[in-house]
Image (tube, rainbow, N blue to C red):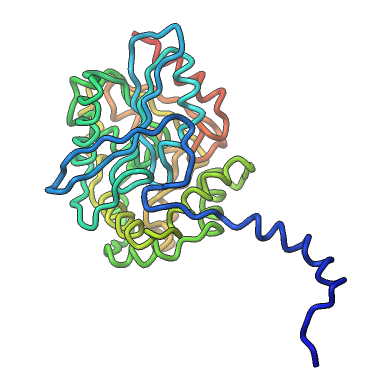
Length: 336
């Protein structure tokens, strides 16, 4: 009995198969080779912990009239410099020089086989980049994990930070102290090896966008999935595991009161992001990740703080509703 598909049936099935083939996520190199950044990508080479490393970054000049000020944008854990695309455009158009690095272990930057990750180390790496670019003082805009890094940078180099803006930063609570179980680096590594485009989308839709989804978000899902499934997937997963351990074990929560510069909190109130919530006991999970409360609580602890809330928005208000987000940010940045 022949198992060959009749020609007429093949003709009918081909149009059905093409969308599935087209929908397959692309695959990118270990430093995101093959993914197009919205502005020219440059590279900063330096030595850290005895290793020759490089950071990818964008340095976008201001559109006229320039105001003489620089903004450094710090991406989150599941984001890259490229995901700041809309904010770069808005801030550059407002006259700012916008510098957007990819941190070591992320996106277009090196993925070392061994690295002692700390927020202090990442802050120093960024400080060295800014020194190379001739930037002695800047305002910082940190999103998600980038908010933790921006906070550490501001504590570490207070005289070189004019203003600090935090977009749904994680680390507004200490998950470990609240009872979230610890994961070993090996456990994080095994978890990261299993990442898929569908899993990333499901998590982001539920946590970042409060159940909503726009077609434009898919590009960022494909970016992460293509990096995670590419030829450097094991090194990408290993660095990701080390970074998760850093995030979980190095809270900035206890130092918010030490921030000396004007600080803006931009908070989507429907955000539920909390590291380790997927393995937390139900009673612990029920009391973590409540950004509608966390923003208010942390704003009270920061001496010179301003809180702007975006009711009903999730983890990335700059992507969900860019116009009101950038209006609030730019209005605050213009203050003396």
